[in-house]
Length: 85
Image (spheres, rainbow, N blue to C red):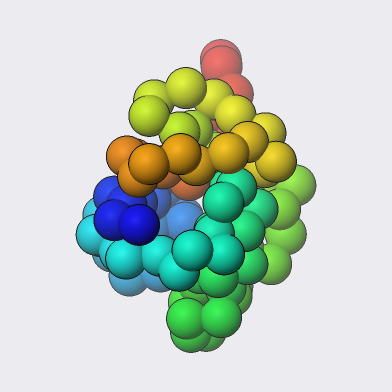
């Protein structure tokens, strides 16, 4: 399925891109599946997703847990937790 993936802050720095368009295999059905698939794409991805307690995700601009489905493509964003101050 075609998918736009956005990366923010240090996640973007580790991966080396702020955005990419990917064609995911049919086995990618949830955010967790996507993370697993991305982590196998190279060292930068593996480093970005090595500690999932430091990552948040959004699907089509809605915060979601990692077990959230990715239905019919769209957009997934990964970013560090947001803090106020």
